Image (cartoon, rainbow, N blue to C red; front, side, top):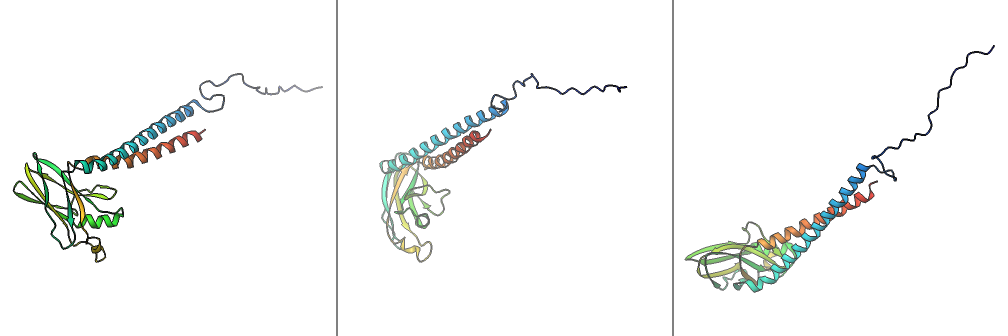
Length: 221
């Protein structure tokens, strides 16, 4: 006599229900799609801002360099080591800030530092004498071969400037100080040139960051 029949468990077939809103045809979730889109947009923005910063920085630096000769109110020479130097000057129309630049004649950073640090300028204005020391300026701005020696405030009237190299550096460095160098007095602070350098460096970092973000967003699946 046959025994009782035990029912077999039902095997579930393929489901007709499809998840909606979680994955597309290529299997990429909606959240990841949005993340990739945000990454691409961010990368493009960083890249555009970076390139714009580089362009503005280069333009500002070049414009400052070109306008230096044109805007200079006085051009003289920094005397070689051991000499007193000749006085040169200009007439100030009122109380105003001026910056002294020196053409170091070299693009070597170490040589520029020695040359600039050795230069001291005596500025006579408004009945008093101010010393502008290249080694004591708060921040130095360098455009190719030209570097700032420092800034001063001139009073209205005649302004007289005299610059010379002092004893600075090693015995080897003294050979660099044995020649006179061109000095320019330019109105204002070197702020524009400094901002141009900052924009150039920051723009480079942003452009690189934008490229990295774009690369990562394209590779992510």
